[in-house]
Amino acid sequence: MDRYAVVGNPVGHSLSPRIHAAFAAATGQALRYDALPAPLDGFVATVEDFFRAGGAGLNVTVPFKEQAAAWVDSCTPAAAAAGAVNTIERRADGFRGHNTDGAGLVRDLLDNCQEALAGARVLLIGAGGAARGVLRPVLAEGPERLVVANRSRARAEDMVRDLPVGHVAAVAGLDEALPPFDIVINATAAGLRGDGVAPVSPAAVRGAFCYDLMYAPPGSEGTAFCRWTLDHGARRAVDGLGMLVEQAALAFALWRGVAPETGPVLNALRRGEV
Image 1 (cartoon, rainbow, N blue to C red):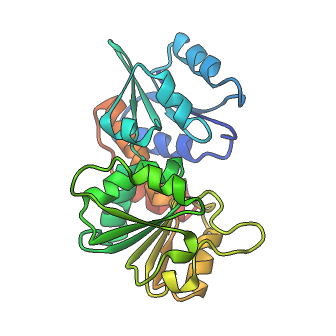
Image 2: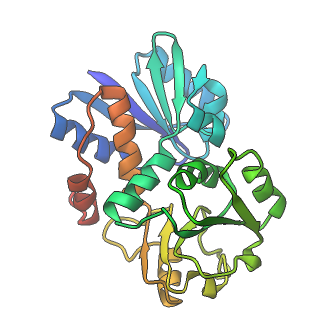
Image 3: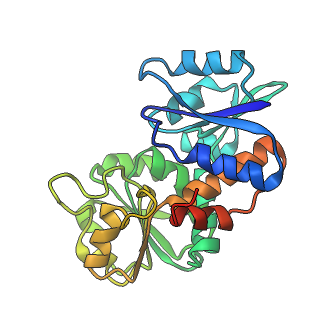
């Protein structure tokens, strides 16, 4: 039986084993998928031991996505542009790094949330690895404008500096993200800092569809960011559970050659049945 896993630290809370088990059952695939903890200073050793023991493929979660990009033998253009790998494919010519996060977000927004990116005014909060992973796929959908808001202007400017010709992202500090926006995407790990300080002005989320890349436990009231945006006039707020399912489906199809249906798994997760 082929063995797969998600490697991270921490990783015991991950929903990925449940998601891939559901995909396997629905598509008739025989496989094993585990959560694989790695010490913060032991990513390479953990991954090499996994593949040496016959592992067929890996997902990678925080904080190892950048290390994964450095470890693989080659990267797809999407992974190279993001500087981060969330899926490792074992091939005859070596290990290939993929990043399915951005495509997973776009699929969730368009298919599950029924939100159009084409022609939209989009605010992306953050300039770390998560933001890098989704920036180009979002821009490829043709928003009217995209503003990157980050505490460090220099880091945001560095993120957008090498965008392809024709893709323009304005850069603003967190206090300079001037509305109106149609879609607000939070790509920071905190959402709302422990001191309760909001990531952007309340005016920036008023009337907008707000999306948090982080996801809350199934059956909960959503992330702190989602709750805050609704309290300040967002027309709708969704966490990143759908993105998690969609990026997992892309990895599953890459490894197994079968594209699983995502809707039933996502709905079951929302109901706490998976």
